[in-house]
Every structure is written in C-alpha cells, then in structure tokens.
Length: 374
Image (cartoon, rainbow, N blue to C red; front, side, top):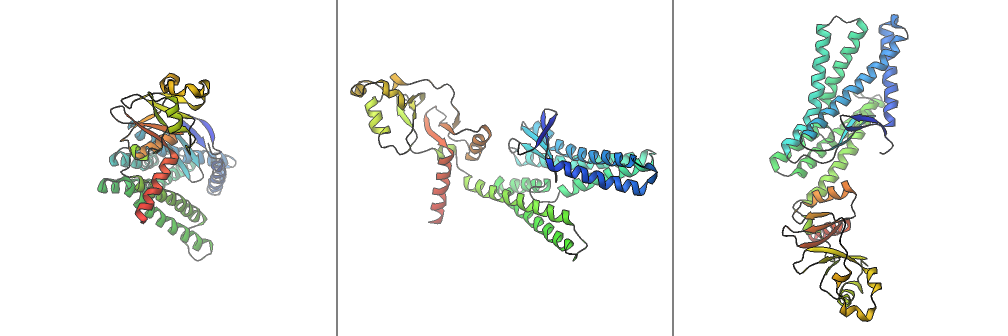
C-alpha cells in the first residue's frame, strides 16, 4: 500500500504506518525526552523512556482523531478501507463519500470533536489528580496537543477537516457537492500559500512567525488542495451525466436471431475496435448471453447463413451491470473500486443499452469540452 507497513487491525479497520512516521517518532521522542531531562534532571535515563511514551500517546491521540471519522462513517454504512499514520498526522481512507451534506458534515466534524474531548479529559486529569511533576508536564502537553490538533484541523480548507466541513456547508447551500469541493479547495490553497510564505520568511530570518514545519505543512496543503480542485473540475463536468450517456456507441451487441453471416458482415468485418466478444440480446433487447468471435471458426463459412448466433452463444458466468440512470460519478467510483475494465449498462426494464468503458467516459468528456468550446 504505497510503501506503508501494515501493523494490524483496529475495530476491523486495516491499520498502517508510513515509514516517515518512524522518523517523526524518533524526533518527537528526542525532543520531549530532552525537555524532560532539562526540566527534571533527577529522572536521568527515565526521561527518555517517558519521552517515547509521550510520543506514542501523541500519535494515539491522532489515531483516536481518525477513529472518530471512521466510526461516524461506518455508522452511515461507509466502508473504512484503512487508517494510516504518516509524517503529517493520520488519514482515514473511506470507500465513498457520504450521500448527503449532513452526513459529510458529521464525518468531518467527528475527528476534531474527539480531539476536543481528549483535551477536556487530560485537562481534568491534571486538575483533579495530584500527579508527580513529570507526569503533570506530560499530561499538560497531551492536553495542549489535542487542543492544537482540533483547532488546526478546523482550518476551513481542504484537505483538512475544516475544509470538509466547509465543503458540506457549501454542498448544502448549493445542492451540488462539486461546488463545495471547489470552494473548499480554493480556501485550502490560500492557507497553503500563507503557510509556505510564513515558512520561507521564517527560514530566511525575516519573520518570527512560522518555521520549517510551517513551510512543509503549507506545501502539503497546496499539493492536496490542488488535487481536490482538479477533482472538483472533473466532478463538475460529470455532473448530471449518467451511465447511459457514457455507453460506447459501437458497443459489441448482436441479436440472437442474426445469422453468423449477418454477424460477420455487420459487426466484425471492418470493425475498428476489433471486439473479440459480443453481448447477445433476445427479441426484447434483453441480455441473454455472449458469443466469442473465435467460436465461429468451428462452423464452415459456407454454413454461416444457416447458423444463428444463439446456437454458438454461451451463458455469461458473471456480468457487472449498472442501471442506465446511475450517476456517472458513482459509476467511475465503482470502476475504480472493483478494478473493472467495463460495465454492462441496462435500463430498468432489462433492455441492454451497451458497454461502458473508461475510454468511453474520456470520449464523452472530450466531446462535452469541444461542444463547450464551440
């Protein structure tokens, strides 16, 4: 999974860590361990162990944040494919988008809410319990980090949680999810440029605000917000289109009652796409099987007029179908999720419309772009 290391499952969710996480774990352990040594020299070597424990608890807080998103998504019937810890925090990979803006809002806000709850719990522990000084410092740090994690993630720009909250709000107002993605992406790019600028000024010694981390986080926001903006553009172009719109106009479909000679003359000879298999329909246009071009070799060509397609037709063991009115955006998600080369498009009455491939979607978008430019 892109070089990530699987370390187990959490509540049935595959859990991964990126190799970059180990670098950050080491840096955080060294940083907090050094701080504890300076503040509590009597701890000795124990300070470094506490530094490691602190670092692990910080990442556990990030993990809890991602589990917040995951549990709300699962409550909506959305598959959580994985949770990954990496250099900039964590990421819960969802199988699909929420069906409604309200659902999207709930998934987005769940993570920051978990962080704020942890902030409250750690704060309460320090207020109510008389802990040793070193533990008090660690709990205070965990409290602060969770507060910072919740507040930072509420910055209203993609790919942060606040960007997803903003996306859901714009989606609710406009009724169009891609408008929410586009707007939140632009805001994310703005904050990305701000982070990059502050980071550069800090590195050059021209500003006391920011650091090298500000620069890196800004660049991270820019890259991801840019990808979200591109996704929004594609979504806008696909908006309103259905599976039926993207069917290949030259789909390999032949009637069961056609003779092999009619089949060869009308569908095989001179066919640019060189289909090797054809879908077979009955007199009502419903899918009944398939025929392989190679199977015709078993019949002498002189007999082709006397043999019908249905005599060589084979049943289809497994066919992936979608209704013709299914939104094209959902169809693309299905193609990607199941790694399918094509889908068979069928109307509600069972009539076969045709074959839908990724190439036919690209052709549809090209035609639409040409029509808009004309």
